[in-house]
Image (cartoon, rainbow, N blue to C red; front, top):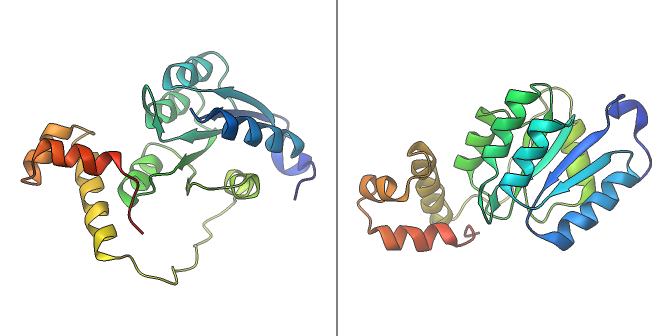
Length: 184
């Protein structure tokens, strides 16, 4: 699949990659370029939004958690500037709540890290309503708890204090939970 996908991509091959993991974003940019995309990278929400405002791309891959904020802010900017942009949200903190939030504001798909260039390309070029296969292993109790916390956090517009109040949880405890990766 590492060949040029010219016909599937269409005339506009611009691709915005927003991730603060510099080695990862450089590797992904090279791999996507080999597949026919014309990548442009950004390492922060601010840089991603600036590119989205001035040169909105046809495709975008955006990390959810960046050092200066939330990647969903870049998704919103892209949706405003270019409604037809195909956006994949990519994150190491996979959660159903954030996936739902990403899709609600206009992301085409949501992938958990580690995702390779083939996964990203397939998600960007996906057509129709293909349903994924059900998981072989159901979620653990820890994962269900974590998903619930993420869902409430998103419902509270990512406000830690309000989320802690609604969950009857200490704010610092909630901050520690939100800073960790999702349990298996």
